[in-house]
Amino acid sequence: MENNQPLIQYTTVSDSVYLWIKNAIIQGDFKPGEHIAQESLTKKLGVSRTPIRDAIKRLEAEGLLITRPHCGAVVFQLDKNCLHEIYDIRILIEQYCAARTCMKASEEQIEQIEAINLRMLNYSNNSKEFMQLDRQFHGLLCTLSGCTNTIEILEGLWNKCDSFKSIYYSLEGRSNDTLAEHTRIIQCLKNRDVAGTKQAIFDHLNDVVDSVSAQVNFS
Image (tube, rainbow, N blue to C red):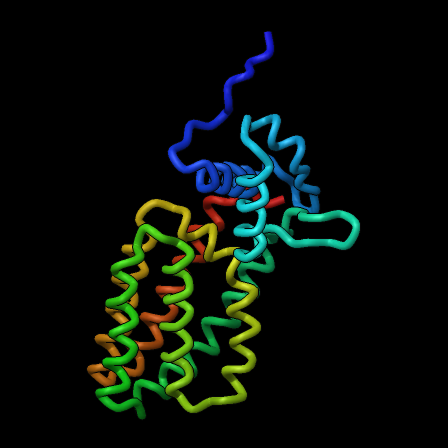
């Protein structure tokens, strides 16, 4: 007998649909390159087209879905080698910038970095806002190094990290981990501990790699 009941229980329809599709992508139920058929999802989930469209827009913004001409939204290729490659390079470059920031930033500038981390406390349950502030944290941390050309390289890497960060922040407790890791980086900056700053950057970013690698059903 066909079950006409929705497959999800929700309080906010758009949020629940978004989480359902996102989990399906992470778990591999939707394959890389697979077209997301809105009409099929409305029937499967027992909801209207509006929350489906809203969820797709959010997932496109996070990089988990991409829009292709004449096809619509398709699933991004979550590639484990890509994850490691992007983060290996990002770690090296951010360590370089953070080390210079540690040596040259003023106390007031370090306090500006800390202020961003404190603002993040207010958004620990909002992955979108949290991710935007996390980007600001790393952006200021590296910009204060004065390495303008290097920042241009990092901008491209940060964009490529969004889909993986979206997965990371969907995991329980990861926002609190980020806040603690940021606090460690800030303390190293205040102590002018270059080696400690570089190690804290490595541990912070490598945590994303380890957590996402363990969570995602890579093809």
